[in-house]
Image (cartoon, rainbow, N blue to C red; front, side):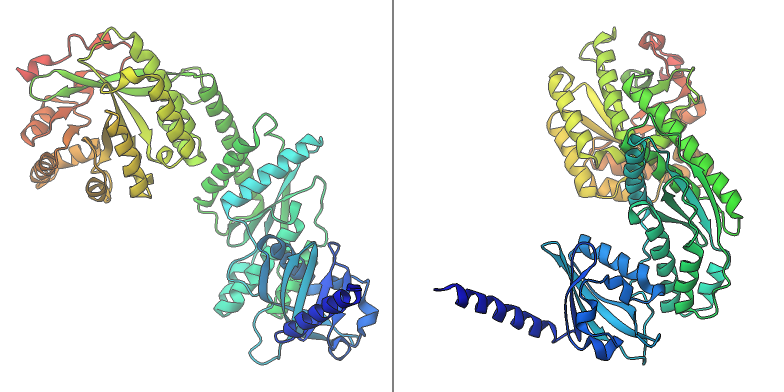
Length: 552
């Protein structure tokens, strides 16, 4: 008995919502997951010359101007991710062959795509793409999505390709336009390239006129030039003479890498390329640079992964010495790599690990190796301690923090005997997070040293915000202080400030008796340098300490 009332209520609700939608839009559409029109309301015939009944069951994109079809498809894809987007401008085709400008808003709900269209007059007409950002992924996002797509294709037995697209003259064209249209041109290029890439989301900007996109093997991108020309000409009439150059190479060098390491390698490679001066270079030259960088980066990632997993590195020790008596206060643990590796320089691998986001895994492996070594040292008594380096990058990685604390909890005997040096402090972005990490170590009786002090302008900001036990004065700052007229006064003021704060100071790169005398006069507490021997795997090499007579 209540059924008719329910039906009428549902119809009433739908009519009400349609009426509310008309407060914004002139035309309303409902599409299914395939883009087929299942509902249409509003004066469609007055807009396009076609009756509403005629378009039911057809593809909505067929009503859109061919120059804007990819803009609409990108809008539809983004809307599905972001729930709702407003005021995207496209052009609808009329039966007469003319086009009309409309603003579109849309959202997805229950696997249905709802669109509201509003007529847009010619006066003050905005560009066809209403977005401040081009449809390119940033380097990190591109690398993540490309890595996922590459591994998916590899699992299917296919080798994906990366195409490098050059559009000579694009930069000059954008310079000739006002800011709004210049942004719109780049946005249109992004929409076209993204739509041509795997998944519609694997395109990236490399230079102002060069772009990369991941594509299926053998894809010749034959229609891309015409689509780009049409999209650009719609914003900048007469600009259709832009040429397009393309070079594609197969990405067949990553089969033994995990998706995460592949992502890291791509991100590191593209970041390296974007730092280079490639403006004005030919597409063929840029593509060679890119593919060489990808190949080298993936090889470096592969080698560094092997170093971490197989612990193919060893610990060298260098003493930190009390400047008053010449006693060894503690040893710094430094990493060294096997000479059989392609690059056995710690600096190169560590720098690459930081740039590629792998350093936190290495820092955990290094801490574990130092603790294992510390158990075996002949100096295994309460008098000596060892410092372990932590990259500023690692502190911001929760997995590293959890792994380090788990390691320390398994070895409680290290309390008071391990120190931690925070290196690469320029990578620190959130001082509150870093200070929380530091205080967590100090509460558990581990002292913390801030490395590289004086090497950057932010050093004093770090000293003010971070409660540490020691600062290590960078070797370059020590050497500059010896050369500068006011250097002695500056270094003396620094050590006095630290003393007032209850912070000890270590002078680095003390390699001569003159350097030792200088930093002693400036009030440093400890010294480190080749004057007392180069890093060694055997702590016994520092007993007796070289040049001990300088302390008598």
